[in-house]
Image 1 (tube, rainbow, N blue to C red):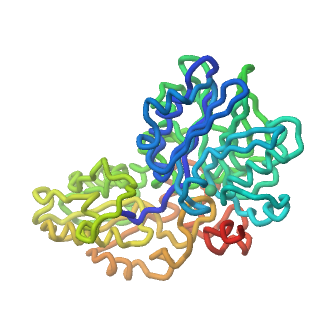
Image 2 (spheres, rainbow, N blue to C red; image 1 turned 135 degrees about the vertical axis):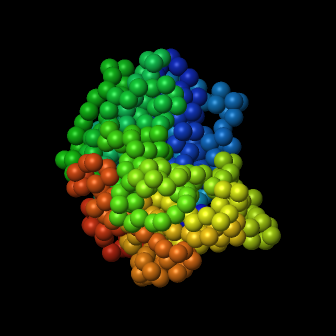
Image 3 (cartoon, rainbow, N blue to C red; image 1 turned 45 degrees about the horizontal axis):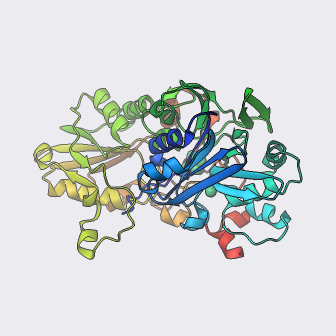
Length: 467
Ligand code: SF4
Ligand code: MG
C-alpha cells in the first residue's frame, strides 16, 4: 500500500574495478540504496567489447540471484533502482538504459527529472523509441552526438539539459558520474579496498561494500574514472541547491550529505521542533522509520520519555500481489502495528518527518486511539508541503497536497489529532547547520531553483502522450 510519502526518483551506482567481478559489488550497493526506488532494479556490466544489461521489475533481491549475477561478468558497470517519475511503471522504463548507435555505445542510469524534455525531444531526429522517459532521451542524445567518443558525447549533451540529473554512465573502458549544476540529487565517490572506485547516490552504499568516501561529485561536474584514475570535467558553473528533503526523509539515516550526518540533522530538527512546538505528554514516539531521528531529538529536548510504540514490519516493500478487500481494509496495519501496552492511558507526541496527503497520519492517529491513547499530539519535522516537485519526486500536483489549500488547524481536524505542529522553514534549514542558500526548498517555499516551463506543469506521463 502507499503510505502517502513522496517517492524518491532513483538510486544509482557505478563501479570501476578491472579484474574484479563488479556485478556483486553493484548488487550490494543497490541493496543499500533500495529505499530510493522499489519498482525496478538493473545492472549493466562491460567486459572488453561486450556490454550486458539485466533489469526487471521488483526489489533488488527479487530481480537478482546468485545465478544471474554470475552471468554478468566484467570489471566495470553501473546499477540503478527506480520509482517511476516520468513514464509509467513498466519494464521498458526500467534502467540502466542501453543505447548503441553503431559508433557509440552507452549504458546510463538517471536520478532526477528534466524540465526541458519537450524542447530536447523536438530537436531530436524522429525515430522509434523503445522507452518513454527523459532519461532515455539523454542516452539518445549522447550516442547521436556525432562525437568520436562517449565522453565527448556526454560533454556535448550535459550543457543542454535543464532540471535534475544525477547520472551514472559507462562505455567499454570508463564509468562516468555527474550532477546537474544545482546538484539537486546527491552523488559521492568512494575508493574500494580491493582497488578501484565506486560512485553512488549515498554514502550508506559505500559503507555496505567497504568503500571509503573520497568526496562528493560537485554540482556541474562530470567525473570520469578509467585506468588512469579519476578525471574531473566542469560542464557548468556550480549553483548548489541540494534537495532539502534528502535530509528530511529520502536519504538513509546513516548517510552523510554535505559532510553532515543525516541522522544527526534529523535529531536537530526534532530538538528545534520541541522549541517551536512543545506539548505536555507522557511519551514521544516516532512514525517509523523516518520519524525516528526527529522523535529522539524531540524527546531529548523536552525530557519526555521516548518509546518505539509503533512496530514497522521490515518486510513490507512494494508488492505486486494486490491485497484482498479484507486486507486492504486493514489499511496501514499491514505495515505498522501499535503496541497497546506502551500506549494505554498515555498522552502521546507522535513525530513524523512530513505530511503529504494526510491520509496515513489519520489512520495512525485512529490506530493509536483504538490502542488506548488518552491524547495524540502530532509533530512534523518539516514545514507544510504546499508545492509540487518537478525535479524527480512524485509530488505531481497541488491537488494531492493537503497543505496546499488547507490551514494547519483544518489539517489537525482531518487527521483527528489533539494538536498539530510543524517545524518552520527557518528551523528546518538551521538544523542542517549549513548556509540556507545551498538548498532547494521549493515544495515548502515555492522558490524553484530552476524555472519550470509551462508545458512541464502538466501530467507526469507527458512523453508517453507524445509517442
Ligand atoms: Fe526536494 Fe522539494 Fe526541491 Fe523537490 S521541490 S527537489 S522534493 S526540496
Ligand atoms: Mg526520471
